[in-house]
Image (cartoon, rainbow, N blue to C red; front, side, top):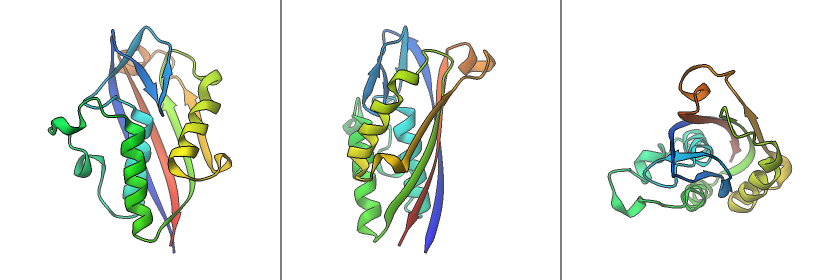
Length: 157
């Protein structure tokens, strides 16, 4: 049985914050605002993996109302989510994702992001795609006041 899940997350950007994408701190004038580390890419992948396995979503397991998750490393949350999915008998086959951010440019960080995801999820890097795009200065993301990520995951049992 093959299943597919989709995930989406968006965070505000603000000065004096770190921009963390899949555990990589990206040099930037602004960083992500979130209850955890605000890693929208990891959060989108979590929702996609949990969704594909019909196990709920990020908020079900790591609610922002709980201080336990304050400033949490999102790769730890991703690892825990992957363990839940695997314990249900699923295998992660493929992940395709996109980071939507006006600046900074992410091209030179993509390989490092993919490597971190590969280690965390436990699948080969050639089954993890991460792309980056801008929105041509439109809206919240285009004005560098926010960023988002989308992910689609294929799993099998």
